[in-house]
Amino acid sequence: MMWRSYYFMMKLIGPLALTVFYLLNNITRAKRARALVIAPEGQILLVMNSLGDRRWTLPGGGMKRHETPEVAALRELAEELDLEIGADRVISLGELPSGSYRAPIVLVRLRAEELLLVRADKFEIYAYRWCDLDRLPTPIQPVVHGALGLLSARDELATIK
Image 1 (cartoon, rainbow, N blue to C red):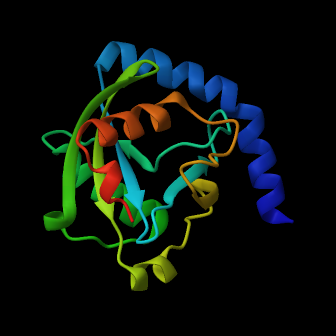
Image 2 (spheres, one colour):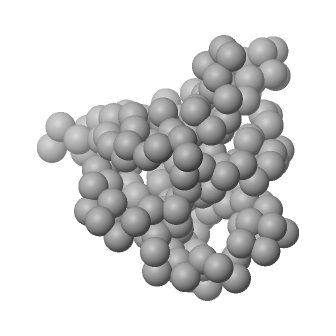
């Protein structure tokens, strides 16, 4: 019951929070790193944040000062999904516009045994799901399709499975 109330409150303040984030991002030109996390069988990990527009998106979050996109994405995966991944397993795919900010996108491939370790932080993540590339859920943020485009451009898409 407590979580239901919490998520309801986050949904109510979501539009105001998005407006504040938009204004702050335009003032600070902040970056928010995103991770395209791929399972051994080729599914991608999508999340729906507790606060926000309740669309499926890539996990990630704000970059700290002097933090690289790779380090920021790994920190966010650890904070939001309890995934501890080594920096040697991250590949930068590039950067995309995402609303009012630029989003560096990094690729992370999980091992089979790591799939069982994913646990969402209920304060930050409303839901998460593993999705086949040909059956992405809706509503979905455009950054997901953009990240898949970056992946495809690197010819990595053929080697997902």
